Length: 67
Image (cartoon, rainbow, N blue to C red; front, side, top):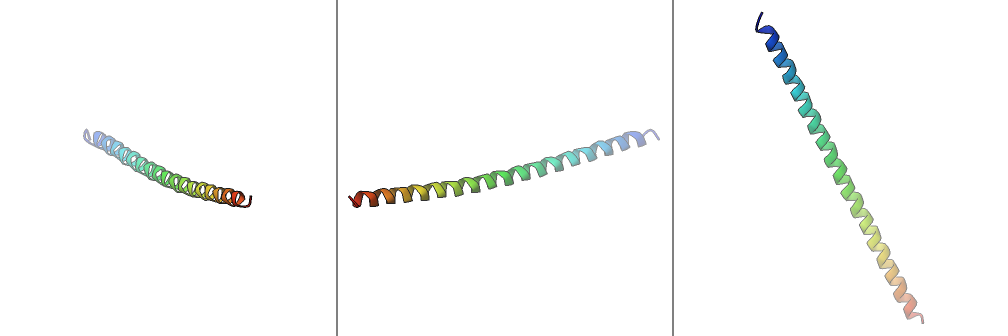
């Protein structure tokens, strides 16, 4: 009987540790996905900016050639 309570307490605390580790791993996976999505969005925006700059440069060259 003396060993049941400490054993039960140890098992309960051990289970909490597993749950905490699992929650932390899930949180880390979500953060990783958020970072990857942020990088994709940033890359897409950079491509749009580059394309807009190229179009602007082409218009400027055409306008200069029309004089």
